[in-house]
Length: 274
Image 1 (cartoon, rainbow, N blue to C red):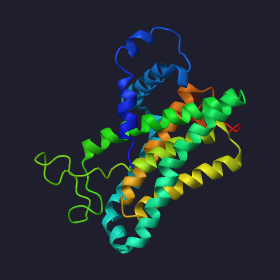
Image 2 (image 1 turned 180 degrees about the vertical axis):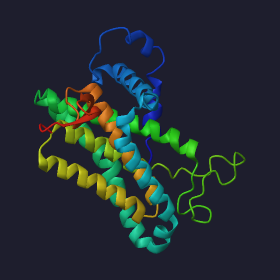
Image 3 (image 1 turned 30 degrees about the vertical axis):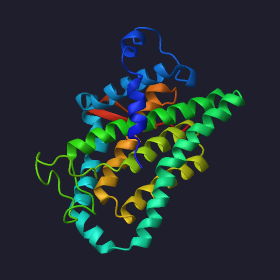
């Protein structure tokens, strides 16, 4: 299952709209204003892709653990897949679980949320549905670009070792294993929903779903563990980007430089309203 048709549909709205609307006040993304939705997606992608240019010292608090987790998972990728072995029945079951939880479920939830919110005049629910859908489209666009750039074989391709650019540019693309599309999609969706509805029950539900989908992609032998780590992390970050740039929800953690009697320091704040 791929979001490529959806990506193409979004791109069809882009020509002539970015320049025509970027100078005007930000409008709402609704079914009646799909051009505005396309503009939002383009603006998001520009912000997401250019975000490495805006990294600072405080970003090391998540960059270092992410790099470490990716490195460790890359090291044990092949061993983990070989340890799982080949079990077609199990792989088929987890493939279905990941498709339902990682693609069909989130897309259906966003659609139902939009309709229910519109019918009941619940703007908060409707806007949450819009933001979650926007985050998933953003995630899919980035995912597709990264897949072609990284060009990694999945566990069922080649010799099963997940080679990157196995034949150089001769037969490119040879694989699209990293990042995991299902993982990046469901984590983007989960972060938006958990940020908008911050009850412990909602968070437990959506993050459990995201974790299940991520694990299922490995158990289905569709991805290596590192593919899922990268996809999950990027999805979570994309969900947070959309949440905090398109919504009035404050970030869970915030970091600020402070001056103390002992010199410069970093203040970490936690938003207890989440």
